[in-house]
Length: 364
Image 1 (cartoon, rainbow, N blue to C red):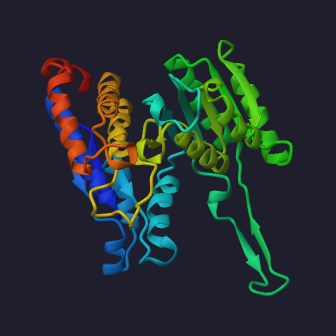
Image 2 (image 1 turned 45 degrees about the horizontal axis):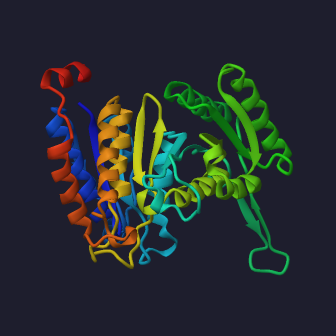
C-alpha cells in the first residue's frame, strides 16, 4: 500500500493540493487501490509560528516511512529570502537524492500554445539533473560590498551524476517508444563540464542504437523550441539548463498552470509537485488552476505502475479543456474547486473501473 505524504505548502498550494487529493482519493477508491495519505504541516505558517522549516527527523520519516510526497507550492513574502522553501524543497531533492527531475510538457489542446501553426500532438519529456550543478550552493563572496567584490558560483558535475540522469532519459525513451534523445548543454564554452556530459552521452547512447541522438547548445535549443518544437521528444540537461528549458517547454505547451513534475530516485522515493509557484496574489480567490497538481496525481499513479489510470486522468483533463470547464487563466469561468467537481463527475461517467481482483493482483 503506497504511503503518500501531502504537503500543501503556501499560497495556492493549499487550494490545488486539496483538489489533487480529492482526485487521488476518488480514483483510488473507484479502482479499488489502497493508499495511505498523511498530512504534513510544512510551510511558511509553521516557520513563522515555530521558527522551524524541516527537521532531520522529518527528512528521515519522508525517506523511510513514505513512498512518495505530493507537494503544492512553497514561497511566502513574509519569509525573507524564502528560506523555508529552500530548506524543504531543495532539502528533499538533495537529502533524498531525487536525482531525476522529470518534466512532461504536453500540448493538451492546440488552442493553448502561443505558437502559430502548431497543431499537435506535441510532447516534450524533459529529464533535468536534480542534485548537482550550480544548485549545490558551493561558492562564496570575497570583499563583500566593496568595489573589489568577487562572487564565485561553482558548477559541480560528477560522472556518476551525469551518467545516471542520461541513462534515465534513454531508458524512458526505450520503454515508452520515444525515438529521439537530445542533450542540451553549452559545451563550446563550458569545456570541462560540457565535455563530461558529451562523453557520457555518447557512451551511454551506444547502448541504444535504435534511438536517434543529438546535442544542442542551450541557446540554440531555446530558439528551436520556439521555431520547431515538434522535432524533439526526450531532452536531457544539467540542473540549470534543464530548469530553463523545461519552463520554456511548459510555456510552449500551454503554460505553467498545466505543468506537473516528478522528482524521483528510481526504486526509492519520489516527490510530485506542480511547476507553478505559490502565487500569493491570488491565494484564496478561487482562481488557482489545479490542473498541474491533478496531473501530478497522474504521474504518481504512473510511478506506481498504473499507467492506464494515469492516461485516464490525462484524458479527463483534456476533456475539461475541450469543453471549457477550466479556471479563468485558460478561458473558463470555474473556480479551483469547481474544476475538481467537474473532474470527479467526469470520472464517474467516463473512467473504467478496475476490478478489485485486478487491483489486488497489481498491488501484489
